[in-house]
Length: 92
Length: 202
Image (cartoon, rainbow over all chains, first blue to last red; front, side, top):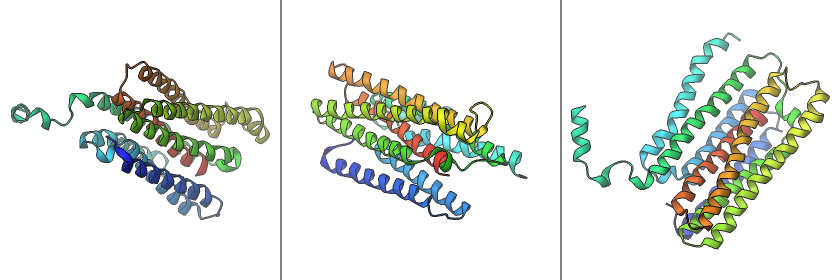
């Protein structure tokens, strides 16, 4: 449960971090970086932003572990899905 | 099995992982987990098709990212408004709550307007100029399926939030209901953050 002025300041802080990360994300696409480096950076930033939203706006950081487990299951299954599909496309 | 039951029966109600007050929240989280798998399947499918294709346009050059960067910002801001609306109703400040949830609904509607404009522009001008047809091109298909599926979620969110606003105003919903609606709205924001990166920027 959120409460009082402290947590509101925290939300504004998260908002600023999210905005700055978005600006950086858009910015680095114009730098002409090597494809692999750009992809790694972009995925890192995206996962970072998604985690910030889940932990702070959706309060996962302050909830019981049960909900975190529920939230992590789809990600585990997606990784599994990717691994299962890799043999289909690996020898490009 | 019998051991587990014994442990469960021995535990105090306060020590159970979820109290009845949070069942609604658990329900929403379970729905979101299922929904995340739908999005996950679509995004992984998109990645698979893209990786296996020989020719794939640079999305940024075809789609343009000025408008969508603004749309990303819009959803992030509306997430913050949602959080502030929840904080307001938890403090019992109904007027402040109505103002912020109204802004959330407005932000969602504006997002949909931007997306409608983007789709119209792409389908009517941009894609035909590049000789890409909606029906026979994987780039276009995956783009419209992913952004369309997400757009449907935003539409649902705008309707959901409007219902919550009306129910709170009539005194039928309390802060806990707003928190659950907030979870859905933040999830829509979270998914857009991923789609913006995977579909537009990568």
